[in-house]
Image 1 (cartoon, rainbow, N blue to C red):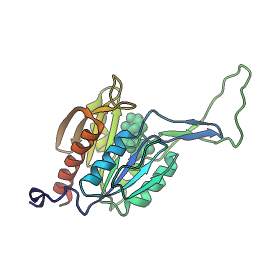
Image 2: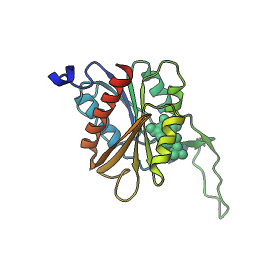
Image 3: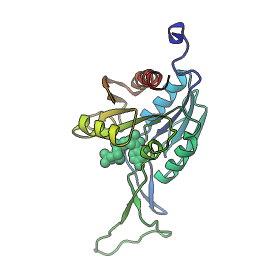
Image 4: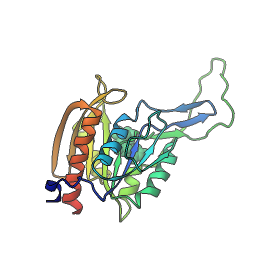
Length: 226
Ligand code: CTP
Ligand code: CA
């Protein structure tokens, strides 16, 4: 009812957004990263602020300005730092939107010195799995309404619905990467899944897509949490 009188969709709600890639250091001059630009997550943070939410943005290493209206920005580099920052901020959040492309693995050991070339012999890096931020949150008894992303190159629907269930999420936003969409691109398209429904958000700018996503999240949040 309030919405029909012009009350912003997320007025009085605290929204936590993670965005961008993570960098996992190998040595003082090298890291393992990924091709996330952070643009989708930053657009989501901006759209949530436009919808009246108090927004905290946890950002991986990106060269992006803080969107207008975002109350707080926490910059991190590694997946471990992002995990710690998100878990600390989640206690004060009603909704967490995990748009970050969190590195799945980190080098088991970070070399304090620059690794030297090995004259023709191969170099083997041992990687350790990083903790899953969304799964850590959903394992807690009291946790925010959880929205995940799933960037897939193939079998988008089945992988995304599997992640929705296995990670205990309230909603997942799935996108096909490659073919000029998704990572490193200005446009994107998403399919949203929740336990008993789905919605297509067709190809458009990341800013417009973020506004549509936030509207859907607000709607599902109201249904689930009142
Ligand atoms: N995610 C997370 N913590 C991680 C890895 C991923 O919270 N350590 C979140 C992402 O922010 C995203 C969702 O989980 O919202 C799905 O990420 P994705 O990489 O698609 O899924 P994974 O579970 O890591 O599976 P895979 O990479 O094998 O497809
Ligand atoms: Ca992953």
